[in-house]
Length: 77
Image (cartoon, rainbow, N blue to C red; front, top):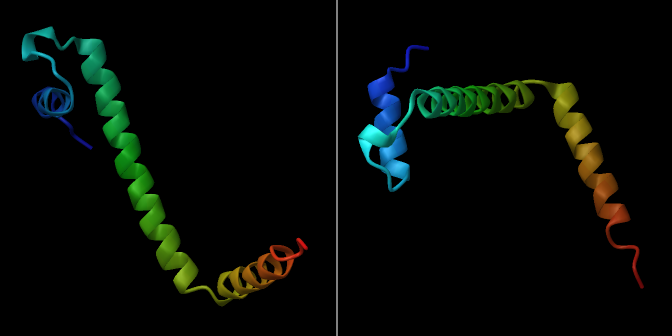
């Protein structure tokens, strides 16, 4: 992933009330890592959703968990 300093500076400026000249290199580096982590998490969630929708064992386990949660969740008098 090639995320330029200029792109990161723009993202920082868009989210914070800060002037471009006040944005330091450590701020850029940390924001770049946050962007990468967010993108990676999004990709993982998409992969997991696809995997679970195509895997019968996962679907069965989810149904069993939902049924068990339904039985346990209504035990209060």
